[in-house]
Image (cartoon, rainbow, N blue to C red; front, side, top):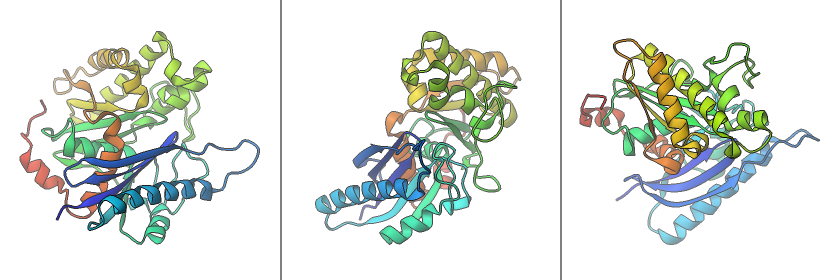
Length: 313
């Protein structure tokens, strides 16, 4: 019998939920705007959690109505970081009211099912490896340039976790020394310079309305950070997604590739490529589904690794 995963992507601008099949198909999906901070009073973390729970209940209800003889085996979640390992608590920089919020415990108590949580950019990397543009790759970084900036890294066919599960925070590579203040407490982080939130603050209007000069700068700085990762980790491919990168399109990708070419000059990193993520706007939900299936042992990256070519085409 086919397996199904309730998938949840929690971002600073949008929260999306859906049902993902074992074949990687999105059967149902819906999204809401992430409640924004109220400047006049402290926000309760419960406001966002109730929105999340209501969205999941809606999607679960639609699934039950159309698939009465099937069950949702797991809830897979991609959430902005940083977080404690396995999402025991989450502290997304773009959701100020969630600090050490016990997301996994709260979701399991509310829905009485297994919950698996990982960073949203790591989830995207897993999804691209499973169903997207990294099917035949063993070494790559998946990058999200959206409300925030994040990354997920595969080395030798394995998703890297790190000491606390937070490996891949590309958004906090310093690209402009003495640059803009970042929510992490540092200055000049990639996220503080090119995220949708940063661009809006710089230009005074929505990031989607950036002029060509800003799009060029966003691409250049992204390419600079990716070059550092390519030089450090011996990577040849970066798959980039997110509303800012994909929204800026060719202007972003041309500038990013040119800066990568300028900065990655070692024999092993020269020729590294920046490509749009193949999953596009579906990447976050498919990635969240991949997190869920992986926790059930139904998406074994070692098995996927054995089917890869072993090259970095």
